[in-house]
Length: 151
Image 1 (tube, one colour):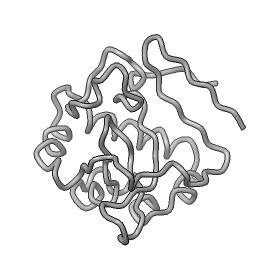
Image 2 (tube, rainbow, N blue to C red):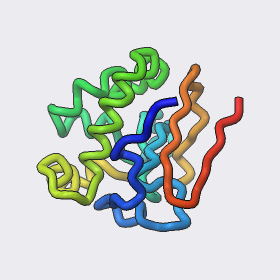
Image 3 (cartoon, one colour):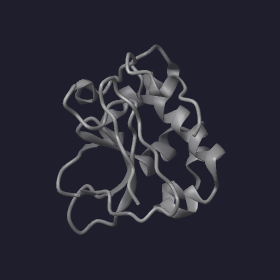
Image 4 (cartoon, rainbow, N blue to C red):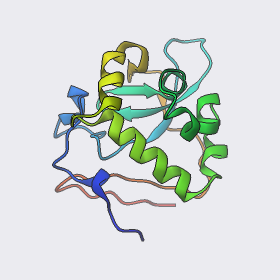
């Protein structure tokens, strides 16, 4: 098991207000991938849950040229292909997402916050964790909360 880094610090906050809800499942420290679509009938895309919203990774790739290369297959809806790139790719993207969603001062976070309407959508009936991910589990941490992965 790997050591936790600053992206797991429960004291750090996000500029996404709903990510601060102590009863919420998706704080800044827990950024799970999932499939979503903005409306019924649209194609499924890959996003990251944050608070009660979803960060659209395809829109993010189009907006931020520094993050686009880290997304790779995710920008095209290919979650398993991204996971097959290995641990280093996952960690690099996690750090980039954390920096962009963090409330701390950052040019990346300022850009994302200014364009939030393009990047975030409410997590409603069109969000799903049903994507099959081979051999990968990532759980964030929050003070007083434990998560357990089961096969």
